[in-house]
Image 1 (cartoon, rainbow, N blue to C red):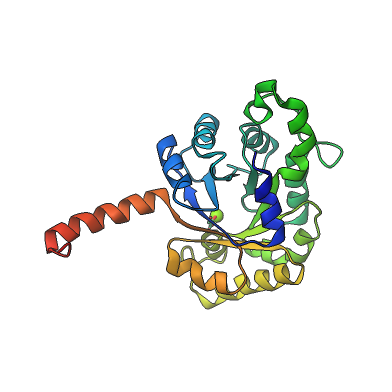
Image 2: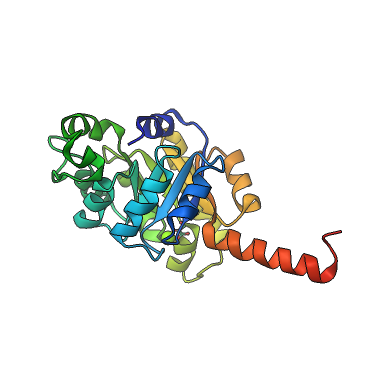
Length: 254
Ligand code: 3PY
Ligand code: MG
C-alpha cells in the first residue's frame, strides 16, 4: 500500500488518473509507467474478477497508486479489494448518509469501522500483517461517488459522514438518474454538478470527476477538482487504432 496517496488526496494535490477496465496486467503496468498519479481500477463496469483486480494491482504497484471502484456497496467487495492491496476504494452510487457510513465502516478496521481481518496480499500474505493492520486505517482512501439526483439532494449529510476522504462525481450515472443518460452537458445536469462542487469546496472535501478525454476534464481542474480520471484503457486503444488506420488511408501520416 502506498501511504502517500491518501495524504496527497487530503492535502488537495492534483491527482490525475485513468480508468483500467481490461483484465490484462500488462495494460495496468503500461499505464502505471505513463505518469498518471493513480489508476482507477474499475471493478464496477470493467470485466474484472477479484483475481483480475489483484493481478492489475501487482502489475502497477508500487509504481503507481491504485484505487479500486468496487462492484457494489457491500462489505465483501470492499474487503476483497482492500485485501488484494488497493490503496483505496471508490464506492459507486452512494446516495445517502447511511450508505456512506456503511462504506466507511467496511473499509476501516475497528475501532473506526467493521472491516474484517484477513491475511492476503495487502498483509504481505502474513509477513507484514502486524504493520499493515496498524497502518491501514490511516493509509486507505475512502472515496464515494455522487452520481444520482438523490445523492445531490443529500450531499450535506453525506459530507458530514466521518471517514470520507473524497467525492467522485459520476456525470454519466447522474445524467441517467435525471432521465437523460449520457447527456452530461445538459444544463440541469451541470447545475447539479455545480451544487456538489460548491458543497465540497466549502468543506474542503477533495472532489473529482471522470471525463473521456482531456477536453472533458480540463474545465473541472480549473474549478478546483483535484481527483480526476481522464480516459480509459479501451477508449485509448480504440481511438489510437482508428487514428493510425485512417492516417494511413488518408495520407495524414505524411
Ligand atoms: C459515471 O459517470 O457514472 C461514472 O461512474 C464515471 O466513473
Ligand atoms: Mg457511474
